[in-house]
Structures are given as C-alpha cells and as structure tokens.
Amino acid sequence: MKKFENKIALVTGAASGIGRATALAFAKEGAKVILADINPEFGNHVLEEVKALGNDAIFVACNIGKRVEVLHVIESAIQNFGRIDVAVNCAGIAGTVSKPVHEYPEEDWINQIQINLIGTWYCVKFQIEQMLKQGGGNIVCVSSAAGLVGQPENSPYAASKHGVNGLVKSAAIEYATQNIRINAICPTAIETPMIMQGRRKLAENPEALQQAINFQRMKRMGQPQEVADVALWLCSQKSSFITGHCMAVDGGAFA
Ligand SMILES: NC(=O)c1ccc[n+]([C@@H]2O[C@H](COP(=O)([O-])OP(=O)(O)OC[C@H]3O[C@@H](n4cnc5c(N)ncnc54)[C@H](O)[C@@H]3O)[C@@H](O)[C@H]2O)c1
Image 1 (tube, rainbow, N blue to C red):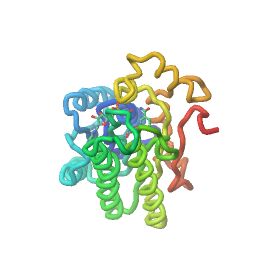
Image 2 (tube, rainbow, N blue to C red):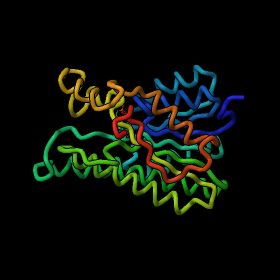
Image 3 (cartoon, rainbow, N blue to C red):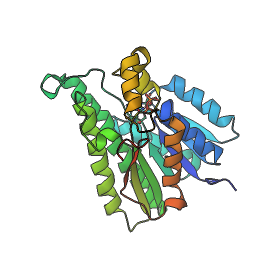
Image 4 (cartoon, rainbow, N blue to C red):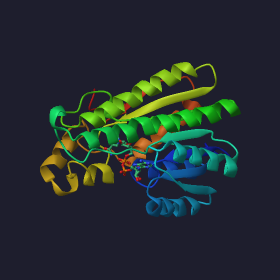
C-alpha cells in the first residue's frame, strides 16, 4: 500500500522547485493533490506531470498574499475532494537585491513579509479551520535556514522566515491536543530556480555558486526531492510525536 493512498494533499508553490517535487512525491505515494501557485503556466505543466502518474489532481491559481485567493484554494479543495489531510506550504519569494537594513527598498521589504509571512499565515489559518472541522490534519511550512539564523543583506527574507517559525511553533502548541500537527522545514541551499536565478544569480556567478555549495558540510547543494522527502515524512504517521519542530535540512551546515 502506498503511504498516502486515499489522502488529500495540498501543496502551495507547486509550480516549481521544492513545491513541484513535493506534489510529485505525494502523487507517487497515492495522494490526490491540490496544486496551488501564482504561476498558472508552470502550475498546469506540473498538474500534467502529476496526472501522468495516474492520480486525481487539480491546479488552483493563487497569490498566497491575498486572503480571498487562499480561501478560494481551500474551497476548491473541499469542492473537489471533501477534505485536506495534509498541507505543505512551499510558496515563497526571495528578495531581488542584497542590501543592508538601512538601505533596503521599503516596497521589497514589505512585499516579502506580505508573501512569505502573511501569505503563509493565511494558508495555515484556513488549513487549520478546515482541519478542525474534519477532526485533524498535518501541516508543514517550508521556512528556511534564514528562519534560524540571521542573513546579512537579506533582512526581510530572514525576518519573514523567522516569523514563519514563530507561527509554526505557536500553532503547534495551540492545536497539539486537537490532532493537528504543524512543523517547519528550514533548508539551506537547495538547487531550484529561486536560488539559481534569484537574488545572487548563482547560475551566472561561479564564485557565489561555490560559496553556496561550501556552506553545506557535504559540499553540495540539496535537491528539491531531499526536501520533499522530509515534508512527506513530517506529514506521515512515522513522525506522529513531532510537532512545532523547525527542522534544518542542511547537509550538516549547522552541525
Ligand atoms: N531553494 C533554496 O535554496 C531554499 C532554501 C530555503 C528555503 N527555501 C524556501 O522554499 C520554498 C520553495 O522555494 P523554491 O526554492 O522551490 O523556489 P521556486 O522559485 O522554485 O518555487 C517557488 C514557487 O512559489 C511560487 N510563488 C511565489 N510567490 C507566490 C505567491 N505569492 N503565491 C503563490 N505562489 C507563489 C512560485 O511561482 C514558484 O512556483 C520557498 O518558501 C523558499 O523560501 C528555498
């Protein structure tokens, strides 16, 4: 029997990187998947990949920074599948510039908090509302190593991810006796478009790329699948005594 047979899994940020790998991993384990993302073109492509595995799935376009759009995802999930057993919140953005706090552009600062923290809060809030109605569930938020330690020249991202960890720990305590577990994953460098084409443009900058690789004791970046595997484990019964944990997935970086 597959590990998530007959389970309903919601994945935000499912159009790319860690979210895509997570959606595919759930589908391989038998789950029906709701894919949510701001990018319908890539999202529908991943939907086809998921369906090719023989699974029932839907894609819902959504900007997690907008309350009504997150509500729409939850409503679509319920209309199509009746419940949400597990949710992995991967949607997020990185900053586009590297600047110290006093020089950081205000609009970018606020936008990262709006998407990464407030958007993740909307997701968690409405997922919990649904899970309370149905008697339980399991939530994982993809935070960051920048939620565990400061990240110079990247303060809004680090602040947003520290915020996500605070949200996760608080919610874990609040619902610990109501059959809802909630955990965070805090990856260091994972080879996805966000890091390769994002703020530091590692794909075009061999020196920065080497630095990013060397940060892990394993002297390599992680792969999206290696984060997805942790997310599935945290959503499974195999981690039944774990809640409120912010787990580094870091190739030994913080050892
Ligand atoms: N790649 C890394 O090194 C790394 C490290 C630590 C944490 N993370 C976190 O992992 C998560 C996934 O990132 P990734 O590396 O897979 O990046 P990615 O850019 O490949 O994927 C992010 C996905 O989120 C979607 N998205 C962005 N803003 C959105 C919004 N407002 N509403 C809905 N969807 C939105 C994008 O369209 C994209 O499909 C992010 O939260 C990121 O902060 C990544």
